[in-house]
Length: 378
View 1 (cartoon, rainbow, N blue to C red):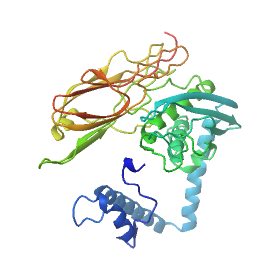
View 2: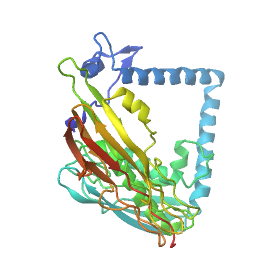
View 3: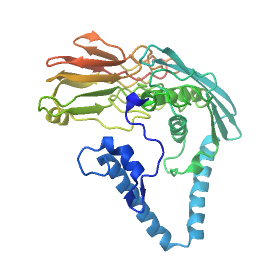
View 4: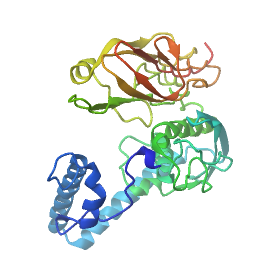
């Protein structure tokens, strides 16, 4: 776990507007400039929360507290009613599906994620019993990450105007054995749990729900965030640099139509990095950035295509790849074909989905992202 960065336990950051001594000591290694009390990202988060607190306080001054609490209750109750209406469309029954993570990056392979979705009278229980035990690698999920993936899937079934509030999820219960891949216990490493395993949880839940709502559920999308991190430490007067991005891929075809190509899907929530920004700020040249034509699965409604991104390094760097769907393809539904697996190639030679590489000037890294699965027989 310590290899992933600085581990910060829950602690008080500030009291009476001042950073506490304990927080200052814990965060001191992260401070870039002498004299700073907090790293820049912590300062930004603190400022954002302080702004939210001030605005919340202003709102509560306008209303008596009883009225304020009643309004919050009404919002949550309204969200619960909208959720209940959406969940009522699910027929009572038990819907099962399983998929797997390809590897954990340190030798563990074929790690299963198993889910049973039990529906009864508009209430839902998502049970991950049967999922593999937590791994030595960093693909483990803390339970809140698993919950985020579960709630995302069911939120997609609800009307667009459904408010973001806790009442929406009152009818959904999650069961996950402690110590399994989706309910990891400390000190399990978890960096890829957030970015990769969460995507597979979504695939598993959609696969299960396809039996309950066959006219609504799409085939599997690319199922990975194609994480790429690269950089170099400062040396000999040359400043250090670091860069991180996720890459888009194909969305799954659905009963409504074909999947979109070269888009971020499901849990990614990140945007494209323009070539101009990348090349102007880092010692990297992008030779190709294009849709990977034909990588989406065949079907009545084809899966969307992935993309290709071809980097040339202009200076020595360390490159880390954290990717999935390099061996197990995004699946199709109701007769649709699978999307193509992704590929990572260094100077034309395939490298594993999870790898750390040392590169030098002139080396080329080509990342081909997976396509989405197709829906329906062509």
